[in-house]
Each structure stands twice: as structure tokens, then as C-alpha cells.
Length: 214
Image 1: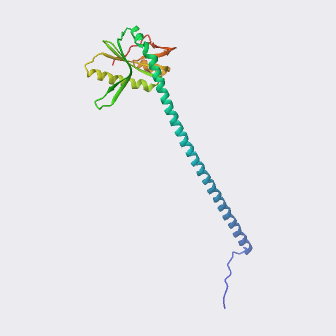
Image 2 (image 1 turned 180 degrees about the horizontal axis):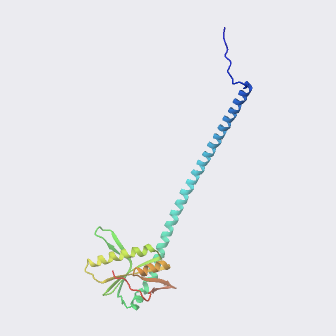
Image 3 (image 1 turned 90 degrees about the horizontal axis):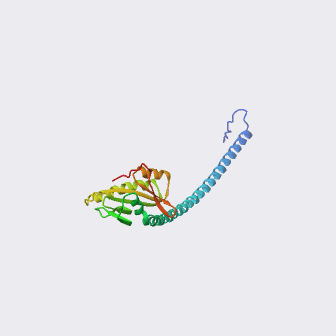
């Protein structure tokens, strides 16, 4: 004779209560599953948004690069304009300071190294029997330009010394836009400061200024 085993429920717990508990558990499981689906949808949406953001950032980077290139070209043109503004009367202004330069080279004199590469390029170069004056011309003078000009004069000095040219090497920095801090740094470095004044340029020489000789 076949025997059927009846589940041994805890005392006081009816079948209906157990069944209700199972139904509640199933409902909770379904709710968790729905929440997981919603989370997956939100994550997918977020991924799509991130992809769009990445694409937009790439477009922005490309535009910024293009703008930088355009600004670079514009600064170069400003630099050329500044050279044309500085060159015509600059030797006369230095002559008023007692230099009496009798030769000037402009347009970017290049100094080449033994490896055939350009070591330095000088915008304006004025000379007399005692002094070589190298002038760096910028539309807007920045701190890095002053540091670069110091190194440029060191290269010029060494280049001339190798050719038994023992004249003093001095420097000046000219700019259409010259900030207060940049002007102070240039003077402390021993450079003459040449600033725009209306349609021409003037040399700004403090009373206690002593030009550095390289």
C-alpha cells in the first residue's frame, strides 16, 4: 500500500500562511528583477550619454586646436608688425643713450650649431666697435620670453668669442604689450625695456638701471 508523506509544518502554521509567504517572496523577487531591469536601462542610457559626451569633447578639442593654430598665426603677424614698429628708429634712441650704433641687422639673424641646427635667432642686432645689442621683439612679452632671451645672449656671446670677437654683448626686450611684472623681470635681468608709445617705441630706462654685459 502506497504511503503519502505530508509536510511537517511547524505547529500553529497553516498551509495558507505558508502559501501566502511564498507569494510574498515571489512578489519580492519580481520587484527586484524589475529594479534590476530599470538599473540596466539607466546604465545603458548613461553609457550612451557618455559616448555622446566623448564625441562632443573630441569636437571641442579639435576646435580648440584649430583656434590655437589661428592665434599662433595671429601672434606671428603681430610680432612682424612689432618688428616693423621697433626697427625704424630704435638705433637713434640707443644713440641718444650714448651707444652710437653704426650697423643693424633685422629680420631674424640665425646662429647655427656644429650639428647644422639653429641654436638661436635674433630679431634685431645692432653693433658698434664696443657693443653688440640683441633685441627680442614680441607682440606680448611673457616671462618665458625673458628667460629665453637670457639663453639667447649666452649663445650669441659664445658664438662671437669663438671668432675672437670680444665686444660686450647686451640685450633688450621690446613689446607692444608689456605687463608690470614682465617689465620688472626684464629690468632685473639687465635688459633694456622697449615699450610702445603711440605710433612709435620708447626705451624705458630707470634711473638706477645698469645693463648687464654678457
